[in-house]
Image 1 (cartoon, rainbow, N blue to C red):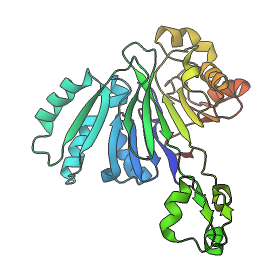
Image 2 (image 1 turned 120 degrees about the vertical axis):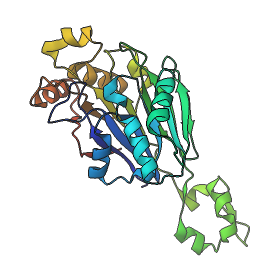
Image 3 (image 1 turned 135 degrees about the horizontal axis):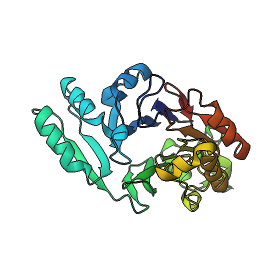
Image 4 (image 1 turned 135 degrees about the vertical axis):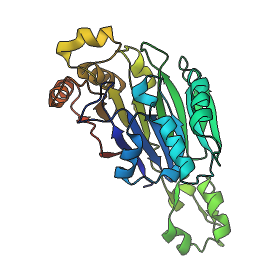
Length: 304
């Protein structure tokens, strides 16, 4: 099966601590590496995870609170010093574009690569990125400022050819694509071998949803139905639900409710408040509601 992995670079919230970095992840789908959010320290974490800087082609920014984007200008500058030539595409709320341009004019003159900015409407659910193997769509969230999550979906692939059947019936290689696309094969004796006998089904397309910085949304589960893995902010425990409401964040229990209602395969908790020295209390609350919950921690790699 082709790789589909999530590298946790940072899973803390706004207040810096010695235990967690600010929000950032790398999503690998096959040979494509994409970043979601870019808080301070992201470059150091990239080094630790051994993801080569030049492999990153796209950065998605959920919103323009500093713990989700303060690392971006530094990373752009470093890419320039490393001699990058490939374009870097950035998808973010429109408010970031003039600020980023001003920073680049100040600190990143003479770049030998293009930074391409794509404005994202955080209020609608829409496919904003697509290639031949996958698509990324926005997930409108409810936070103090415009904010959205991102849903990464593999596209359906063609069935797999059964090499033993191809050899047995002496089917020429020129016909393999036709068979993958649904054709059968007629032997010299006039017997038709159906497509289903010549192939095995393709793997089920996988999906991953990133939902950071949002209050609990009763209808969020409708956009997340059946995703294989969900990262949902879990800033507070239930005892501090009043603070979650005040600052438009979620508790671990609320994140688990979303996972349960959406019928996801696995829930990752993150964006922890600095008040907790041990996030196990968040995990315990989440698992009461949704048993297949896990704590995201820096350096972890989760396979979808």
